Length: 150
Image (cartoon, rainbow, N blue to C red):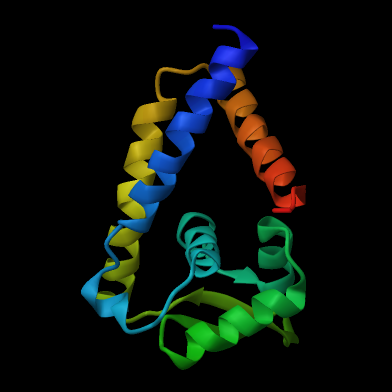
């Protein structure tokens, strides 16, 4: 496939992917929380990597710690995440998914749909091909975020 054919194919595919993501059903337990994609990224990190410090989450999400602090405060008020003092340093706070089984189940169910789709899509690729795909998607996102609609 030539570069031009690949670009054309991606220009056709990406709007369909975006529409599919917009139609992803938010679990009933989480519907009233007004969650945005940034919340999903934060929750994904907590589900897959476990509890973390705000600075660790900020580094993983590639955003400022203040942004993560605001999201955590919002999610904490709504009972989705919990903040606990770090036993090793009481000045730091560890963020985790709520211990409420219903909330945890709703989050896991919501994330599992996307995770299983990615697993099926990435499974036939070699580790090197997966790494290249992730880098390519990152480069696309970075390039798209630099472009302006004039």
